[in-house]
Length: 256
Image (cartoon, rainbow, N blue to C red; front, top):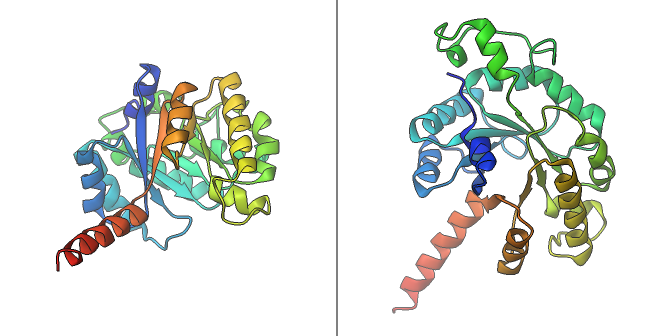
C-alpha cells in the first residue's frame, strides 16, 4: 500500500541515500541489494527487454526486503507510468530528459487531477480498498515521483525550466551518454563533462532539488560530499558483479 517514500524521508532528515542500477533482472538480486544496505534499486527498462511480470516480482521482492523500487523508462509512456505506480513503483526515472514539455507529460501521467491526468484504480496500491480513494489521491499527489535524467546538451539547456516543474523529486546525471552527446566519445571523466555536472548541481542547489551524483573516482566522491550532495548512485550491478567474479577467479589462478 502506498506510503511516504523512505528515500525522500531520509533526504529530508539530512541523511545520505544510495542506489544501484539493476541490469541483471532478478527479484533475488533486489533482495540482496536491500540486505547490502542500499536505499533504492533502479529497475532498467531503457536498455533491457523485461516483462511486466518480471518487474512486478521485483517490486514485491523490494517491498519484502525494505528497498525502494524505482523504474527507468526510455521515453514518456503515460500508460506505463500509471501502471508502474499502481504496481508499487516509487519513482519513475525518465532517461534522456531534454525538455520541460517532455517532463510535464511524465508529471501529468504520475499525478491525479487536478495536478495531473492519471487515471485511478483501487488495487494493491490502496491495499485493495483499505485506503479510501480520496485519502489515496491526497497521499499520491503529495509525492514527487518523477526523476529526470540529464544526459545530453539539450537536457542541460532545458534544466532550468525542468526544475520549475512541481513533482520533480530529484535530478540524476548520465555522464557517459552526456560525453557521447557532446562529441567526446565514451569518456565520462572528460573535464568538459565534469564541468557540465557541476552546472547541473549548481542549478539543482539553487532550485532546492536534490542532485544525484554517480561518483566514478574517490576524488569525485570526496568532491560531491564536500558540496553537500547526499544522493548517490553506486553504479550498475552487472559491471560490479562481473568484475568481482573475474577478480575472484584471478585470485584463485594466481595460487597455482
